[in-house]
Amino acid sequence: MPSVYLYPEAKYQTLVLDIMAIEEDAIVVINNQDKSEEMKSLLIPKDSKEQIEINITGIKRLDVAIKGKVVVYPTSHYK
Image (tube, rainbow, N blue to C red):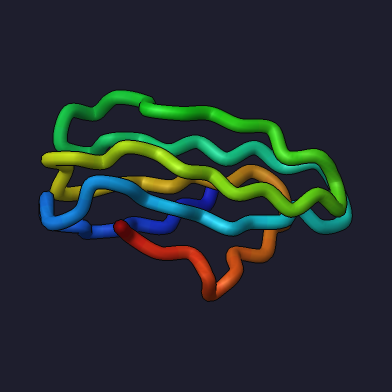
């Protein structure tokens, strides 16, 4: 699965991803790279826009793995 690596460096409490699956259903898996553990897995139906909000308090590195075609909107952010 292709991945996007994020480096919040433990500065934020929440990751908000605005994402939409195109052409087919997609699977998004968010992993805590600090502990090599899966934090969340989500199936996004085709042509469905989802907002994923996840607690990332204390995490320095994240891996967002994506299976399928998606659009990640620029409104995605840390809080």
